[in-house]
Length: 232
Image (tube, rainbow, N blue to C red; front, top):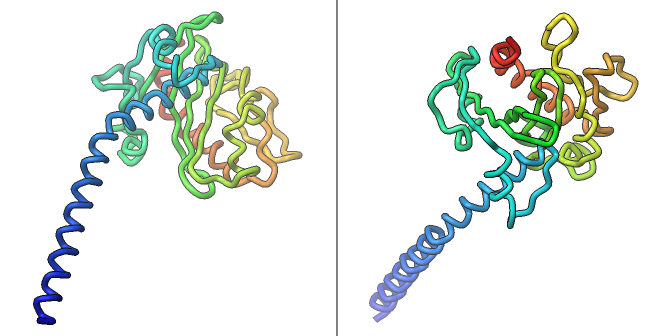
């Protein structure tokens, strides 16, 4: 009698586990298109924010379609190649050999002229950091920046995603007067650096600040030949 009772309990538990798993899988599949759409809208908002265009989840797709007039992929030689710029996974690209990387480019028509938007990805203190940065047609002057993070400390490293940190990037230069790639120096308090290449780091967020500085240098280096081709 006890054996039959145990068998019934085990069968009942197994059936319930299977049913619950099936329900959860169905719910997950039903929600996935919505999740993908929300992720895409958020990415479009970030791209627009890098050219100082505000948007909401409700109007981001419309504004994106109007303002982003072209998007394409280049290699590290600056040559346009096949690929879907919007859906390129930067994490996977950064894991490739440098010469095999695919680099997305977005072109935006603004009231100040044509801007080129480049995606960025690096490492902060506690996890990945990423963002988008836009440059003027001179392929040297920064027009706007938008950064984000996963798990940086609130009030410290997490400040990279605030206007207080992002706004000073506007007008900074990527190359010096000789044409050498300098990128942007995210400086500690008191650190001496050329004003045209310098933004202030985050007090108490040195590792995140330096991670962002390295991200900019690495990614600008990857796009360097693209910059040259566009300037020539």
